[in-house]
Structure formats: structure tokens, C-alpha cells
Image 1 (cartoon, helix red, strand yellow):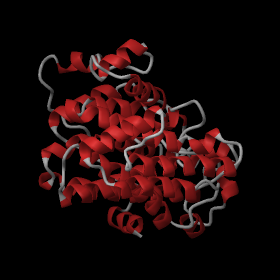
Image 2 (tube, one colour; image 1 turned 45 degrees about the vertical axis):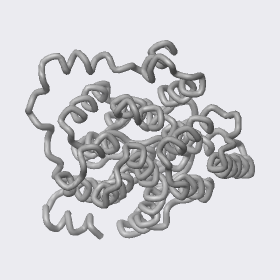
Image 3 (spheres, one colour; image 1 turned 180 degrees about the vertical axis):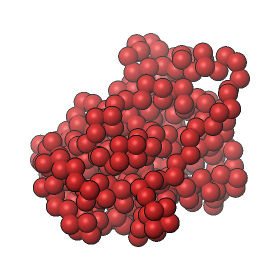
Image 4 (tube, helix red, strand yellow; image 1 turned 135 degrees about the vertical axis):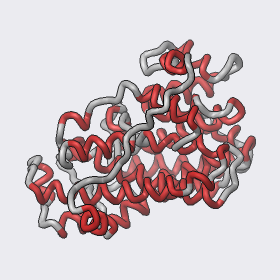
Length: 354
């Protein structure tokens, strides 16, 4: 496993994440970042974010993101004007699918909801979207950017398969889930930006996998509160850790070793993604501001109903923090929101970095 290689090379549990650069942004940038719309802003501010002529369906998507995927909302605000509304539509579509698991009482109802979205995507590509706000905005995005249907269907299919509450068999299964959901969303985002580049696709694959792994880690305390443990079983078995250890919030070294191995795999993917930095078109960089945050998900990988607390954490920031607390997955500091995230996003956007 890549994590074991890292451990033997480093000799200690360090992910080797570099600190933030010291180069300061130009004067006035700090003040401008302060005025990015916050989660408590009025509906009028949300409408203004998408332009004067924002339609009712557009405002619906904005409001959905502002409440359920605030970091995705901030990232989309930093997209070029011509791509912004389509980025909102894609993220709103992702949120609609992600919240199915926690919004239904029975799996059968969840399957019906997924079937609705499958039919909706089929109808969108037949130019007859249903009168649902997200569906209408997604149809506009498909028409505007000729989005690939396959990626949309992959997201639905994967989330449908994972309506069951069961642990991942191994780290590869977790990565496959992330590839088919988070990476697929990134492939669509690149299409919205007009980017067709092999290196950018490689970055999207690795960033998506890192997102999926970090989000799974981040959601572990929440899942534990609902008597669920979804962490890869092969890593747990390797270190002699049972699901009951996580349910009891055991902080033994073996439990921390499990978290270390999983976090290391996320760091490996993040490093692979950044190794392509010089080869990726600058036009693609807005899609990868997501290296600063995790994405929303269903009950397998994200937040409890009516809360986005589990999505409010930066990928790299989380990996730094979990290293600082010696991979104690239940440490209170890991559950705190990053109030400086709007500023960090703005600076990364200005630096053309991910």
C-alpha cells in the first residue's frame, strides 16, 4: 500500500504537507475576499451573485448550494462569468443526489428518487426536462456546453448502488466510489470551462479520489453517532481494529494507524494531482479549487440532514489538522469550520494554483 511506503520512507507519521506560501496578494484583495457572499446572506445577495437577470430556477440552485454546499457555492462564484451558472447547476445536481440517502426513510424510496433523476437526464438529452428547477438549469448547461451524458449517469448509478449502509471492502472500493462520483463531477466541470486536456483529466481523477477519501474520514464521527462505520475493512483488519473500536471512540495506536494509512492515501492522490500543475491549462484551474474543500455527499460520505458542517473543511487543511492531532479522528478541532475559507479560495484563485 502507498501509505506503508510513505511510513517506511519517513519513519514517522508525517504526511509532509508544506505550509502556505508567504507571498502576499495585491493590496485590496483581502478586502474584496471579505465580501464574498456568506451562508447567512439574504436571497437578494444570492440572486446578485449570478447576475441581474437571474431566473427563478437559477436562484433556486444558488440558494440550495448556499445552504447545503457552501464551499461549492464559493468556488462557483470564482468561475468565469460565462461558466458560472452551469457550474451552479452541476453542483446543485450533485447536492440533490447526495441528500437522497438522508432524506428518505426506506431504501425503496431512495431508489425511486434515483430513478427519477435517471429519467430526468434522459429527458434533458431529448430537450424535454421536467419542471424542476435543478433539472431546468442542468438542461441549460447541457445545451450550452454539450456535456457528456455518461458522467451524469455514472454519478447517479454510483450513488444508487451505495444507498446501503455498508463499509467499503477495501481502499480501492472507496477510490472507485470517489472516481465515479467526485471525479465524474470534475470531468463535467472541465467541460463547462471548455477544457479538453489529458493532464487536466488526470488531475480531476486524483483530486476526486482525494476528496472521497477525506470526506469519508471527516464523516466518521457522524457515522459513528448513527452506529455506522464505513472505513475500508481491509485497512482495519490489517491493524487489528474492529468497527466497535470506532463506535466506542477508541483512541489506541492501532485505531490511529488505520486513520494514518487512509489519510496517507488521500495525500498521495493530492500530490499526484499537483505534479501535473505545470502541464494543466490555466483555464482549468477553477475546477481544482476543490483541493481546498470536500464535497457534499450522502449518508456514506458527508453531512447529517439539514447541515453542511461535514463539508466545511479544506482537503489540505484537514490533512494538516489530523496530522497535528496525531490522527485522532474524534478530536474536536477536526469538526470546526474554517472561517477563513472564502479568503483562502480567493487567494488560490488569484495565484492560479490548486
